[in-house]
Length: 270
Image 1 (tube, one colour):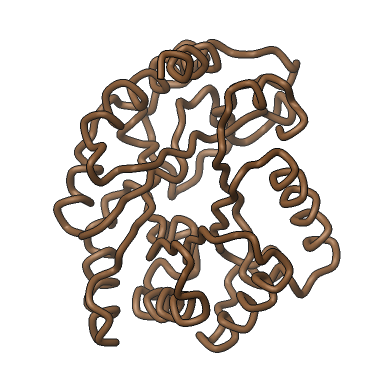
Image 2: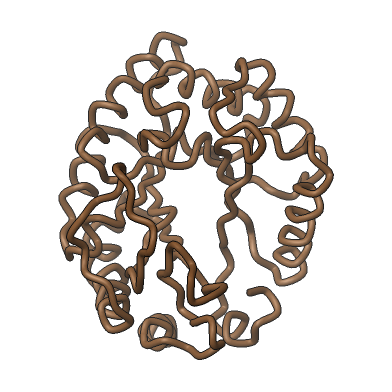
């Protein structure tokens, strides 16, 4: 992405990367992250780093002090990164923190202690039926630390964005304080792996993805601009024709899709 002139010409200055909480323990993972981080830095793009499950032991959860120690390693390697999210799609029950809201709250507190100057999202939540229950439990657990309310959240509103609705955004805003970033969302071109956690009945096509992109940029962001201050559109390029998830601006044939035209026109007008 960072060497693609089509991306560079857009003037985008923020991009997001998901990272396993224990990635710094693994040489091959560090090499992957180094490549992405160095390319982002060279392109003048500020990363938002979202921590999540281990790629080696998916269901392993660290104690808060271990999570904090791994974060210190990450910060030492990339001291120019200031934006972080505590856990990726924390309320998704394919994630090990799905029913561990208190533990997730302790991770958030640990990140704040380790880097008071960083912008840290309490968690990134997915617009699933359990979203509000998970967020309320997390907030209660966090308040027990005497830290007040979380200052920022991330939302992945795929389900409702692809149905051209905004109720999940409104619900999260009503039940939280502070800033909300839409940290992963996009129009779905194709889903090839549907499991018991997947939401059924969502439209899919290149034309649909373009309409969703237009809806997000022209309807959602202006409507909630006082508190919803960033959007991270997922994703730049699909790898193969067999990708399990495809909401990309560039297809596996390296051809731009209609959604990229929507994004380009929006940024030019701004």
